[in-house]
Image (cartoon, rainbow, N blue to C red; front, side, top):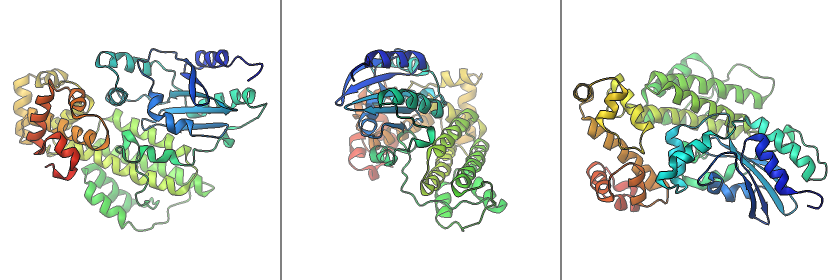
Length: 399
């Protein structure tokens, strides 16, 4: 654009905001400003979706609830992000690095780089976009209320990459809003028990209940109901064994997501998937644990360290117990050895990645901390009944 040094503007905005900024001309990147070292740019995972936004000001929300903002002007575009008001967990960032093919020796730099980005609420990011847009699009004045949500709901986020970390499938049947005590107690008890089969069956036939009025209009009513539901679900999941930090981080992310939506059916679908996800998280924690607190703590530990080489010694150190005592107590309370539990959980994660990512079996094994590809194949076949490649070809073949 004549009269403007776009590189200077992008660089200055990156320095002022503490958020990465990129400049594109005709779809090609011509400039980048990063406030923190990033071995690879997470934007590349969502490049197509973000650059397909055509409004002057738009934004995109990643599966980790990271926000990207875009300003389109002429044949150029300026992209901000990622940023977020909520810090993603370390294991989630490790998987993000894995999906980006970050070299194993660079993963720590990647995680530190993401955590070094200034955290902003989405409203602050949008305010920055509207201000810069004023200069780049001929004095156009936009308010936050003028910035429309990306209507395709991000094209279902790559249409099949799994659940929370690869976005929810919004195609499930919506759940009717309700707030009667009996229904709440039934729903939350099912979440606490992690009984996803019963929960889906119950939701499919849930009675339509008229809730109390808690807002002046339908959209605000749905969002307020959503906030109540996610608050109840997070607490039920905590009672079911989920770590408080994990439950509340997930809750905050869902609330932020709901606040961005303007379509009532999408809010109801998001609420459905939110409750299912909490139940699934508890189900994973309780799988084979018989409700034992020690087993729930162990499951939480394994979930947070899936991409590491987990040992009974490292877990014993975490829980301030001797390794023999931890191993014996775990087996007495759950009926399985720690090794079986750890490798079983890693196998379940490998199944998810084989089914919902295009990463090779060798890459998945390395990511999950196995010493060699042959070791990964042996463990996977022992716990899944088939090889990784056989499972990828036919996910129904695994045990």
